[in-house]
Image 1 (cartoon, one colour):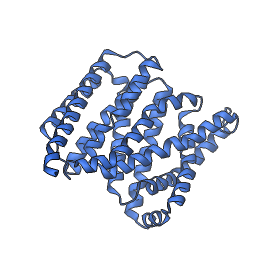
Image 2 (spheres, rainbow, N blue to C red; image 1 turned 30 degrees about the vertical axis):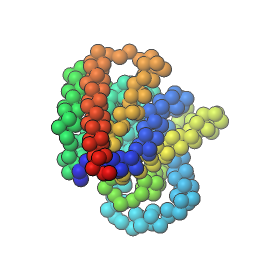
Image 3 (tube, rainbow, N blue to C red; image 1 turned 135 degrees about the vertical axis):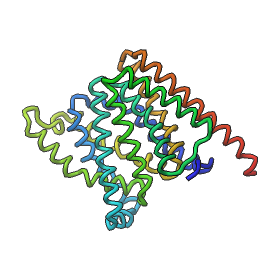
Image 4 (tube, rainbow, N blue to C red; image 1 turned 90 degrees about the horizontal axis):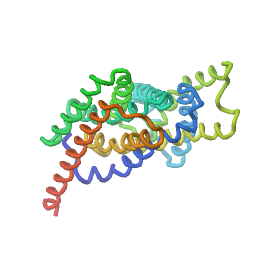
Length: 302
């Protein structure tokens, strides 16, 4: 697959921007539910995501697509793996925010596009220009700095980056729509999620759901905060090249970075600052290259 054309980028761009804006501001929502243990909260996210997906599938009359996917062992196997990956991603992210590792979470999604580029070129046959390879090299240098100076939280960043990159790659490979795929993933995770919520209900602390109506409502809203951006992301992943999608994704960690400084008031370590500078430089080069190629292609299209 070659680099995406301007038309394909434009068709997937609104969905990508919507997903990454929601994910960028997600820590503000997680502040409101920080009393809920990370494992229990992720379980409730799954429980409340499925009904929303089923409702939208019914309104959009997409049940035949779900039925077709359920009859394909290959599609079910891929969606089972992608379901586990997205659950791992959610759990790591929620735990990181709850424990104050905001910059580590942000850096994870800064690393994610580099992994996307490597997967796109190695497995999907996507090609990068010379300037884009320079951007990749700068981002790699930033990651190398993290390896050298931020080992204690590096596992958070790498887990987030790898789990979400492979999730997106798998979703790009299956012939199932964004929403039907998410519905099946949520159904696959439902039994483990219900078992988890039942276990928490038996603990001395009890379930976080059902006691306080405000907290319970916020937990239910977790289904919306989960389903909507994932639906948008899966839509964008099917319409844009994986490499380009990866660099658009820098919007979300940039928002999280600003929130870490202004809302969470977390100190920024020198090694983290150096990493951010290198990756921001990579973003600038990548965007410049896309803009230059877009301008060069316009006269040919006239």
